[in-house]
Length: 280
Image (tube, rainbow, N blue to C red; front, side):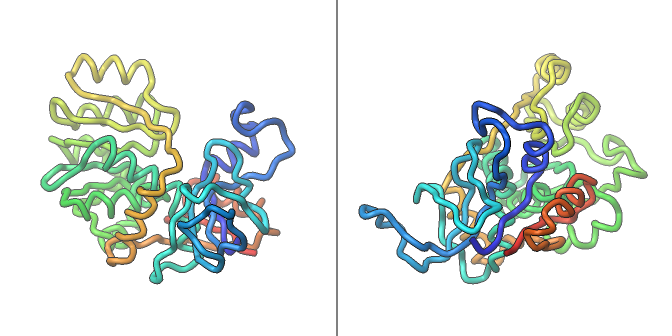
């Protein structure tokens, strides 16, 4: 292991115990975003060689034990790190990047001319979603605090809305796809209100509530939740975008492993710009 990304599922598993069918009973080692160097391979393994730089999100939702010196993984749940990505950036990419990719590409099939609204656009998933949608030709709108707008425009955001001063429903309409990184009834119902008929709302934290699902059906719109899963073709697609200069992984701060509790506290306050990463 060279670096481990931190995600909300890490601190939620630490605090609430996670899904016992997936992670068992504590104590356990958390962490799913991994980046490192191949130390050993199975006899029949042909995708990688010892010494290759690789990254991934192995075993999810079962434990990957990323906050450790060594991690084992199926080869098909890893991909090579492109030359242009540091270990820290590679560690920040898998879970957030695959969440954005599987939402916008696999589920929504976002394409040229689509109007895409990303809530929490400056966060771990959000800033990657902005770039993925932009790379596929969409017009991308994002909600974030005003001090994040300049950075998001550098990443390709077309329209920025400061949700602390302007209700987003007063600033945008006729949206094809909403990626909701906030969740809950309030954001879900307001998001449906800015979508065109037949549009797609993708809710990340907590999934789609009953109230939002009912409203979507009544309005002839779609509302879907998503559970990210290991996906090496998705990882390779993300790596290609990074290699081509169309995807930048923003690292807000790195922490040595001994300061992991501080890193969790930093993530829990909900103000990180991009990703937080642990290093040895």
